[in-house]
Length: 222
Image (cartoon, rainbow, N blue to C red; front, top):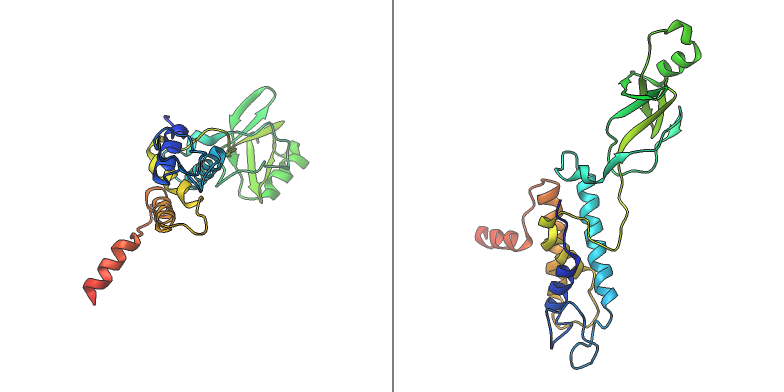
């Protein structure tokens, strides 16, 4: 999956903010007061972009059915019976139970009590294998160990959102760079508005009108 390009986002954000007046699309802030008086450190731009990228990624991970969610899905390490499932984002996926050296997709009981009964009285359940149950992020099974498909995210020094999210990442990066005394504060507001709209509509699938559209509709209805 092609990911959002951090360098391209840096260039776009720096150009929009006029943070390098002499070379606006070089991707590096200007350090002289005549070039840029508000953003003099590249890392400030980078951190805001990566934060926006992380929000996009976590929104996709937490949305059931998102086509990119499997990018961040992996198995947990082997889990003993009654072990806690490691921290994750969104719901867990399938469960595998290992007997001996072989993992097999688990069948789910209707309650934790059934698993406990199988383990306490194996002679009464001679053919019961590969059963599991999850309760409050705790995995119960009747095998030697178990593992769970789960989604997790760790922010890094590179963008991880899909390439198609790049404009939204730029908008979110702008929103995170608001400073007092700006001549054009609407830049940050527009970035924040688009960023939230994109998450709610393009990722979450909700019908949310942009504020500009809402204002036009209200004026027409007046």
